[in-house]
Image (cartoon, rainbow over all chains, first blue to last red; front, side, top):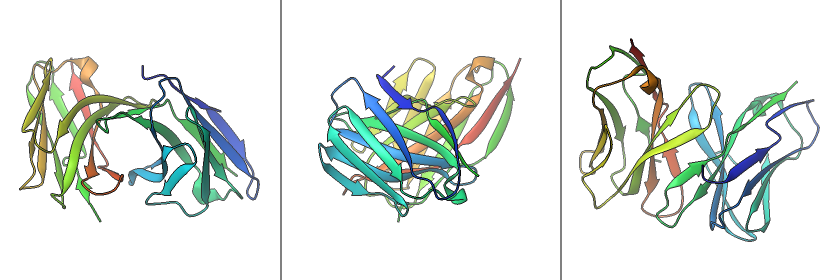
Length: 111
Length: 112
């Protein structure tokens, strides 16, 4: 258990509404990541953070924004949710060796 | 862009068999490679991490090897058990930048 929690664990929302997912770590690691997992695509990196207020885009960042105001929290925001953003979202932390540890995931359904 | 492939997509073996899972990647300029297992509806559990300078890593019944020049890694599972049934994923981190690329996984079923 790498001390990573995600909230909410499940969410159903309507197209066009904003959604924020939260990732919280208890281990004070510098690196944090947001992924989405979809059948046939595996896990794809959305955004990552390498420190407070330091973030960068991943492979599939369009439609998503992130913020990291504290070391322990990394927020993922869908400004205006679309059905194509229905997915399972995973947060991960990266240790100094760049080994990644994952949270339990958030299942998001956009109707 | 790094492409990571895992073949086969699914594998079924009788309990007690030794087995090998494969992971291939297109760009050999990697920093490390990590193997995970994922149980249905769950997050990913880290199994083994191999740095680019290493050839293999072992943990219990698991042994992972890395051949950077050929763009391949294997995960060897000895004496398989029904509890090993899960999806196994590999991920590579590029040598430059902080991007990770995942394969789509191999779904393993160990039959009692």
